[in-house]
Image (spheres, rainbow, N blue to C red):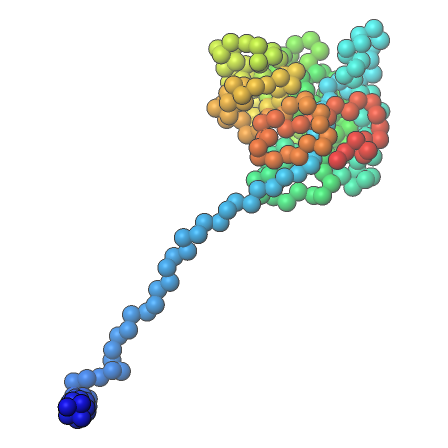
Length: 276
């Protein structure tokens, strides 16, 4: 029985082979004209994860750069750096190959959009006192270094603060950019929601309209902040904010972008041992 099945199978294959040969000889079966669709790779559906970084960038905070006129004003004296000492600090940092960068440079670095130098530093000035224009700004221009002034907008043109004309001149000449220090320098954690909105939103908008620039950075008056204040800053369009925590070992990341740590150095000239 098995032998008969085997013979029948061979016969069928033989007959089918003859049939295919017949079709090929008559042109009815041409494999060379077959259109084989090209192979299409599936699109890459794997999304690249953004590479965020962290940096230990010293952020220095200054208030007054002047020679004190009233030795009895101990509070002002404690916030004052002599112009000669300020210049010595700048010269020392440059001699030690520190690169002066802006808050925006740090922001881009943390976002992974810019590679920061190995040794860099940011210098900031709070409040916008008149001595910045008379004593600090000439040194900044001399050494061509960037700096940021956090100005309380409502204090412009007030006694002891920079004038409208001085700020306009500084913005036109370059090297210095401005950030917001609220409208009237109130402790933002101790005011009503309405006052908080006025201090943050109005302080930002008034300065931007007055001088035709954007204020993307903020420094907390007295260094005081909480989650409500931080949320209000984000809602107002700020990209980062600086505190006064003074932790020199603080690692700057996107997680602390709204409470970046700064250091108040004072009149010490050799800053390098203070740096991370």
